[in-house]
Image 1 (cartoon, rainbow, N blue to C red):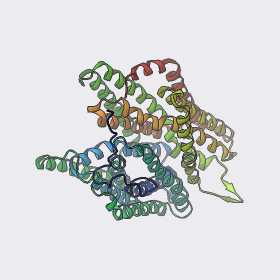
Image 2 (cartoon, one colour):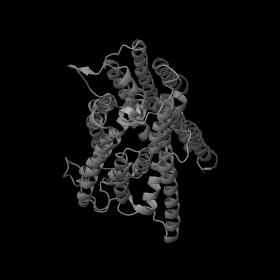
Image 3 (cartoon, rainbow, N blue to C red):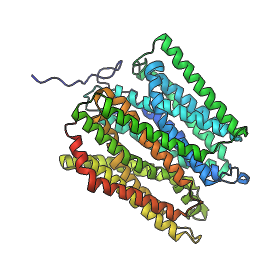
Image 4 (cartoon, rainbow, N blue to C red):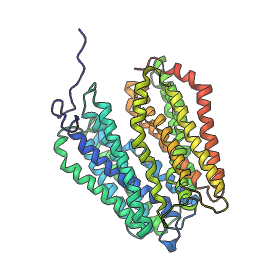
Length: 499
């Protein structure tokens, strides 16, 4: 007799709760929490490099692009990097629900710190947002998963609805925060991002009844002695981070952030390489598991290449929008940050199309490494378009918004080929006893790519926009071709036997 699928909902959820469009009511709480958190993140991100490179006379910080790019890269890299300790603290001390709340409070506090006209509070705000996002992001996704039984057929659709919350927040934030920041006052734009996070926290607390037991307690609680040691380490780390941020802002000491970013690239890359080496040599894996880990390691490299290009959106592409794009409509020049909403708009429109396409093709759809290669080639094609646009604008003549709109379209198609596929692939290939750790390491590819992206954007004053975009085109498109033509079959062989 065949076994009955596990359709039981997560801990504490009513049996087969369908009160939110056929899904558990808790999904609505998490949807709006994530929507507002992404509103706050993308609202601030749309302004960040513009604010840092704006002149002091216009209310900005007056940083050169090398310094601004390095800070931007460290910030975006830190957001993903902190997901590792954020998940650990939830598992050992806080529980997922409390981690989401504490993370949201830290994020809001970070945005409000940036309301003040001081460099010290600017750095402090970035640190708070990084820490808060590290607590909130991995744990809210985990709670979504816990709303469903392991074989509940609604699970994938539930994550798709949740993902829409990300894009709704990402769509609205640049329009509202961008306008307020660029047209009225930079710091008010940062403040509005904080208001969005507070709105998310209010509805999260109000919706707690829909999450009665899901993620309420730590999954692997620390003993009292372990808890004291962990809290001591956390407190010491926070004290050092906050003191360093404030001291830098006050000019007590200076740090070459460009060199710090370069060192961070080496450290993150080395950590990932050492972990893969450990799994393959001393992790106790059988031959099949080693092949699976080897496939993940190869895809990790190409994921990094993808994100070093894709994360130009908030940096060099934002500067292209400001300096080289004609943004005039009926005699009014709209803010450069508004063009940051285009990617989210395309995602809202195209995500259902791609999902339906993969389902329709079924078993005939491209292999995972082929999808990765297509993602990189499409990303590269977008930068080829931008390189031509930058070449036309090199004489000071601004080009139309169609150049950026076309590039974002190609980038979004590339993202849909690679980003969700990468997450799904790691869950399939990771050995069961290393599943969580390997997913955390996978996020290091995004962190590493984001960090390199900031360094590339920082070269805008040393190289022309055309040279930078052309270089990214060659790097990403060539990477896609190498994967497609030279490594695809080997990776497919290594993936054989995955569930």
